[in-house]
Image 1 (cartoon, chains in turn orange, yellow):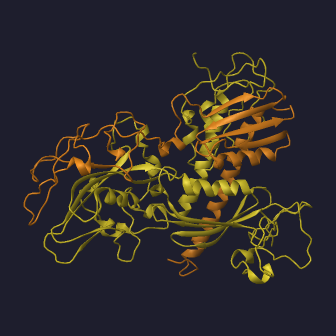
Image 2 (cartoon, rainbow over the protein chains, first blue to last red; image 1 turned 45 degrees about the vertical axis):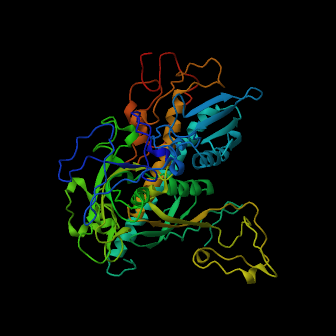
Image 3 (cartoon, chains in turn yellow, purple; image 1 turned 90 degrees about the vertical axis):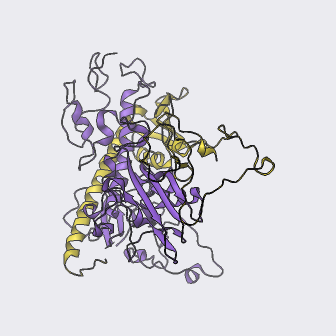
Length: 201
Length: 383
């Protein structure tokens, strides 16, 4: 398992219970005080109870199990970590943008570590603004969490500022939605406090 | 009753929410149909399809929860492999009470591996010493190490409000017997002793961090917008069942009614079902908060980068590598006002009101036609 590589000191490497198992072995005595936390965990024998006397580890025949040397370096693995879908890489900025040269008041923004959740939301909001003449986004490749948003305005406002404005209005709209939901939720909860007033438990 | 914005400008039905006086705002409206301790059936009106869908996506994938992420196995003599059990442990639902106060392990400054600030440690120690019957190891056998193996009896219930949730990291056991999910079975002589570290995460990284069981989502139940086309053998109307629940919220199309090509989807029906790790209304609020944080980080980064489409504008130069929630913008969303970030910078800058109103007020981000040298929107930084 490639997940058995020892933990490196860098903070950006989360370990998954879905793949990683760390067998903590601390010598033979089940009544020993627990070992001190150390950065590298040493392998230990498994504890067994009951009628099983001592467990002899099976001899690994190289013919069937390959080399008995422990392999620290996994075979080449090009599967990216899942957290790379939302954690910015080193030297990666959240948004980069460049002006579109041929057209006035047009810019293309590249959002890193973002997906349709944000892209479509911004695109739709910008689309409904009068000052925006063109807006569109694409996800250049589904394997990489990045999208490009292209905005062209009529000149009264710059694309960067109209994007800022759109984000701001969206935050406000979401806050209103939040308030409305809270209002309605509290109302329903009060109504439900009447015994059996419609609330299923 | 209708869920559409007609091309003649007629808005939503004022009687839908039962409050005919509240028509001042043009904002979204919410109607909750059913409320159960794990499910909310509600609808949102007067908003766009993009917002409704982005909210659904955020709720499904980006709400931080807590789940077991690192398993140290001291003893496993059961019939299941170590990694098999570790995988199952990861999927055990743990209470997400106050999980926003927990740090992400990768961001925690307090430690290298994990610590109290960024994790919850659970232990499980079950041994079948003498019983001829198989011992079932349930999630209820997981104990927080902070409670030293003791848990008050009534804290295993899931709840309708966040206050009733058990302490963060306690396994959620919603079945009748309050056992929780079955982890493994032990024959006589078999034992399972593990230490598990639960960390904060989101469902994008692994589905174990998802707080929702499912989010039902529908709009336009009568297909008046013609967003889909029903497959049929002879007659679609006869072969497809009529939409039951959501169809009652909207008027079915009349015979011979002309197709309104300008109508847009305006009403969206959700059925949000929680797993039990956080109550469904908390899921909704966190979903909105996640979207707001994303937008806020967009705004923060934009504020800092220079604008290449504007020649010779005196602007803040791009500062790479800044964490998106510097200035506290990412975390200032506890209350109603979503624009709390402004308050940190009430410093005297030309043109800035310095108020905390959520609205944009009279100021423009464009700095009233260009910024005067020396006036920096976010205060002066020495560089």
